[in-house]
Amino acid sequence: MSSEPADDPSLHRLAGAVAGAAAPRNRHSEQRPSLDLRAVLAEPSTRVLEVVGDRCAVVDDESGNPRLQWRSATPEDAEAEVVVFLDRDDDGAAEFAVALPADETRTRSGDAASDIAGRSATDPRVTWQTLREVGPWLDAEDVAEFMTAQGMIIWHRTHGFCSRCGAPTVPASAGWVRRCTREDRELYPRTDPAVIMGIRDADDRLLLARSPQWPDGRRSVLAGFVEPGESAEAAVRREVAEEVGVEVGRVAYAGSQPWPFPASLMLGFAGWATHTDVTLDTGEIAEAEWFTREELTEGVDDGRLMLPGTLSIARRLIESWYGGPLVVPGVDERGGPAWHRPS
Ligand SMILES: [Zn+2]
Image 1 (cartoon, rainbow, N blue to C red):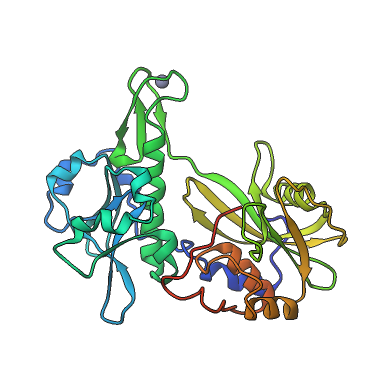
Image 2 (image 1 turned 45 degrees about the vertical axis):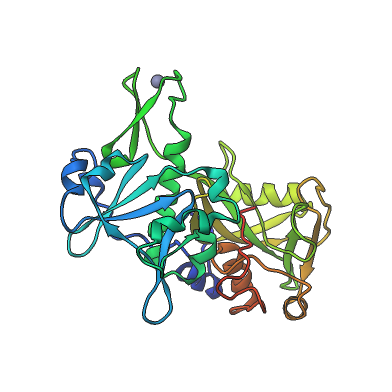
C-alpha cells in the first residue's frame, strides 16, 4: 500500500486489533454464480443471520459475551428482501444474511428494541442490536459477518436501478451481483476507500480534531474520502492540508477496516507533519490541537475528552500512537454510547 514501509513497530501492532479486519471464513466465491439458492437454503445445516433494519439478533454465551444468533434456514428465505450467501463454515454448512423488511425510521429510533422484540419472543435472552452497539464485544468472526451482511444489504437497498439506463436491477450470483433487466450489464458491490490518519509532529504529539457536529469534548483523528485519480497517500496529505492547513511529509500505512455505513473501507495511516501551525477549515473542523500523551491521559481521565469507540480504527490509531490501550471511564463498557463515525 505505502511506498514507505511501516517501520514503526507500534504500527504493526495495529492491524490485528482492528474490528472487522479479520477475514470472514471461506467465502467460497467460486460457488456464487451457480448457487441454487432454494436448494442450499433447504440443506438442514444451512444457517441464516437475520438483519432487521440495521440490527441483528444477539445472545450472550455462558461467559456473558455477546454472540450473533443464527437460526436454521428455510426455503422461504429465498423470498426475503435481500439474501446473500456469506460463506461455509469449517463443517461445510452454508451461512446466509437475510434482510427482513423494516421501516428504516422505526428501527433507527430509540424504540427499535421494543419494536422488533416480537421476533425474539421465543427466546427472551435475544436482543436486537446494531454493530455500533454490540461490535466492541463481539469476537472477530462475528464482527466480520455482521459487517459483510450490513454492507451487502445496504448495497442491495440502494442499487435497485441501473446507474446507466435506469431500468430495475435484480439480484444474481447468490446475492453478490445485481443485473440490469434491460441491458446485458452486471453491477457489483461498491466499496469506497477513505483514509484515516494519526498525524504526529516533531515532538511526537498527536493531532486530534473535532467536527462541528460533535459535542464539545469529542476528539478524533482526521479522515476523508479518496478522490478519483488519487493515491491513498496523496489523499492523506490533501485532507490534512484542507482541513487543518498542516503539511504532511512521511506517510506510513497502518492497517484497514471495513466500515459499511454505507460502503467505506477505512485505510489507516500514520503521518508526520513538517510544521505545527494549524489553520482550520471551519466548515469541516471546529477545533484541532496537538496533544502530548500526558495531556490526552488527563483529558480522558477527568472526562473532558471523549474518544472514538473501541470498535473503530480511529481509536486503534490513537492507541497505536499512545503506546497502549486507553480506557474511557463510563464509556467503554457494554451499553455505553457508540461514538464512532468515519469522519
Ligand atoms: Zn441498464
